Length: 364
Image 1 (cartoon, rainbow, N blue to C red):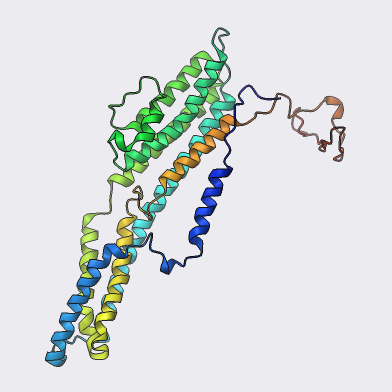
Image 2 (image 1 turned 90 degrees about the vertical axis):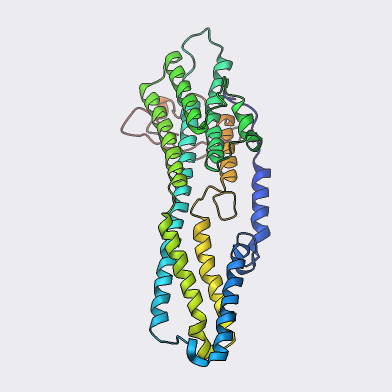
């Protein structure tokens, strides 16, 4: 028997197959040979400049002998430790921000699924018999789609995309919300207001349980907190002084490295300096890139994919067949009568029944 909430189900096999194919396409390529996601092009000017400085130092050293040599077993190992410590701090601080962004988006997904499930199952039908039940169900579906609209709006909000030409998907989603104020600046907060209005409307027009009402308000409050946390990551970067100090420390080390290497490696010092520059500048650039996890680069969070997954989850909720009343109970005569699984007339198996001693509810 179909539930009254059932409508046509959207298949996800095609989408999952495409995702698996994309992962297989790049799995066999070693990370050291992958071009996408690397930052070599961004730091190439710095590597070339480091090589030119090393060439100048080596050329001067070849004419002046050991006059420019700073070969010492203490100074540069100690300074190298300072450089490593600075870059380690930079990487750890940036990764913590990147991971915090992922946690916040996971909270958004969790709250959205919980909100959709609660609305779909626990919000009762209209108490007024004159109200169109089909219209009421459409209102439910619209409310359940609001978390997805919020996720898409938050994505564009964090990327500072204000032009509607670059937010075509969001504009199409907002067109389903009645009397939406398109001139507002913070669309995620506006959408939470629409969700709150639906909850209040359901409280006034249905016999909603007060606990369900409180639970829905808590979920909307949680979504608002997620929006604020994401804005905190966007608007509170790592202090500028740290970035300037770390950049200067790395450059000082690179400029002094050829004078340390020349007595032992001579002209090979140029190549070793460029390789060292790549290692240091690459780590520093990765830390700078993931400091703001909301971009569209290969090292940023895949917000487009997260939004699509959330849309599919919400679509599954409103497309699922809900069980009929009484599926969880059994006749009183079957109580205290454990039975093994046996096939019925239609080939259906009967599950063993066990009585729960703490209540009258019997589970199959």
